[in-house]
Image (cartoon, rainbow, N blue to C red; front, side, top):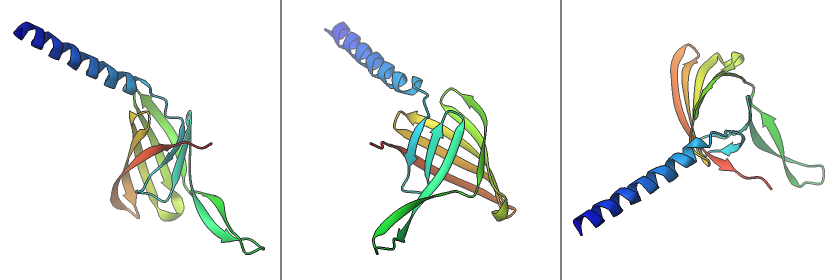
Length: 135
C-alpha cells in the first residue's frame, strides 16, 4: 500500500511538472499586452515592440472617442534566450535610457523589468502584463 501511495504521488508530481513546463515551452511573445501598472499597452510582433496608450477626445458631434498615441520612445531588440527577451528602450527628450528584460511567465503572463537611468538617476521598475485578446 505504501508503494502504491508513493508511486501515485510521484506520477502526480511528474504530471503537474510536465504541464507547467509545456506552458513555458511556448515562447511566443507576440500579441497585445496590458497592465494595471502602466497607462501604456504593448504590442510585440516578432522583434518589433510598440508601446501606446489610448487618449480620449471629443468629436465635432460632441461624442467621446479614443485615439492611439504611441510612446515617444524607441525600443531596440537585443536578444532572446528561451522565455526571456532583452531590449534597449530610450526617450532622449526625457533623458530616459533603460534595458528592458521581458520574461514570459506563461502564455498569458509577461513580466517586464526596466533598469537604467532617468535624468541621470538610477531607475528600476517592474511591470506585470496580461495578454489582451482583441476580437
